Image (cartoon, rainbow, N blue to C red; front, side, top):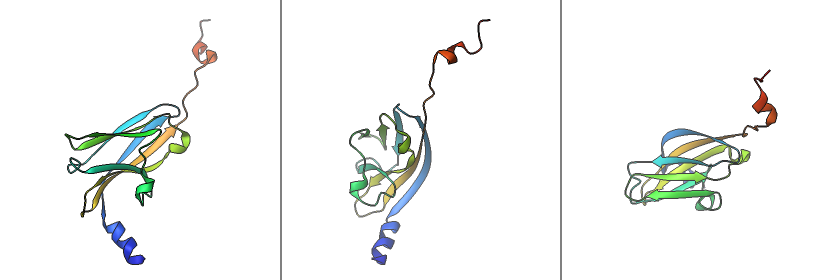
Length: 124
């Protein structure tokens, strides 16, 4: 088992880190890229991202694969505070290490604008 876990960690190459900010209830999109992305399967998953079952491409999470370029776009709809976490964008290259980018998603509470906020500064 130790040998297998060592092989798993050796089979991943992390290429960069991206910080993504969003607000609760809103949508966020970001681009994941790698020069070898063209022509290979891509994935997005919440870390630790240990198997295919950890991949997120349904529900509020979607992916657009630009098949003519070296990037793909990930979109998260209706952000929740508990979406704040570390994720990975990956390129699955058969018989070679996966190339992954680390995404740190931070979701903040949306500001509430009420009547009192509109009157601040006053007309008096």
